[in-house]
Length: 338
Length: 207
Image 1 (tube, one colour):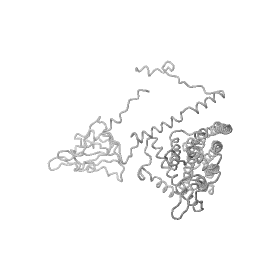
Image 2 (cartoon, rainbow over the protein chains, first blue to last red; image 1 turned 30 degrees about the vertical axis):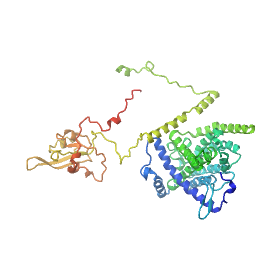
Image 3 (cartoon, one colour; image 1 turned 180 degrees about the horizontal axis):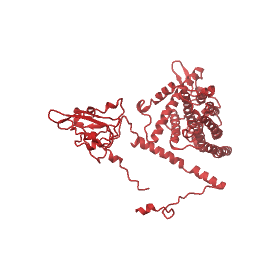
Image 4 (cartoon, each protein chain N blue to C red; image 1 turned 90 degrees about the horizontal axis):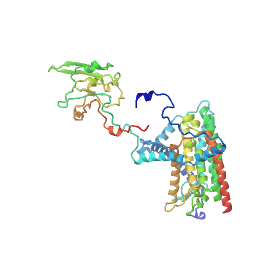
């Protein structure tokens, strides 16, 4: 571990380069995530998935991107055009703004121009609150999109967005409160350092909080057990029914970026962060953890059916929230006694 | 099993099993117990296990289902009735058709039309032979009736083309003379496909 005082000064140029890096890499990864999702789901059904664009279909992203970019941009006649146009941008933008306060890659210095690029674009001291708040604000995208498009399926989709938002948000906050109490900080760097130097991962102390956070994370990213917003079998495409082309693509870049963010939060807060593990260097560990959490989301999508909106609300308010509160109580008691 | 057992409609005298369905919980305590037992049963993980097992089966044990169709094709049965082929005699390379006209006569959709004449050796010679594939219903009567095994059904089932005439001329259906050694003989009724062994499955006697 490098002492914080030894690090070079963070300059504006470094932050801008970092922001461009995050945008480029995560947007690319989010697009590539669609390919990975299709491949993994295919393998789990003993199919091959995309095979024709590039070797084993790895360039499928390029084909999809070209298709989305060149599609006609349709805005329905009776839609509220301004809100319809900015709703996808809200989803994508909040997903990337959330990544500003999350440690994404290791820090490095660009050799010749001597610009230090930090590992977090902005290391604010309320990192977790900021990230969770931004991801929650991202749900305004589906909410406004569904209501602006003058389509009954869109209206149902945004109603479900509201239900989902009301259900999981309390669980997310309460579940992550117990680790915050143990660490005593809201900064991701402090979480990472708390688990450094061979200390046990927080998931060992807080298994219940970890499971609750995973469940809430699935709801937050609209992944399958809780993909109420756009379930094809019930409400066509929900809030994206009237969207096409790049506006539709922005929703999905936002969703996959959110999946990566949830993976990063789960890894840093509960699974030991980017600390070295035994002989494995930290950056491999963090990539492995994020990749596994991404895979887990796809795995769950291939395996489990999804729940009804009322079941989600029942689950969150009647089961998960009491569990989270009890977990906080017990954590507090143990911290007081020990 | 005799027929009378199927005719017995008296429910209750037969060996029906009543499923062991529990009563739904009524009191709050019973409901709570049900929630707890459902929460801690590893049923969800059984589902995860199934998909992971299938993924391992597909990736490492060669049980991938997909056939990448235009590049690989499943073998079809020799009895499959696709576009017709006109076979040649293996010894001389001359076409087998003797111009008897039986196929034209038996064709129930009237799609075969042929014209013949006597050549200089007083043998029947086929001058015109076309099959209208817009009408052909691929019933197989022409191949069945042919006394010389001259017209058979081939395995060429990809029949999308720019013109209907693309398959229907005698020369197109005739085995090319340079591919005479590759000419497949019709294996006869009852022939099995080349991958018949792989397709054998156990009869589901269990249910």
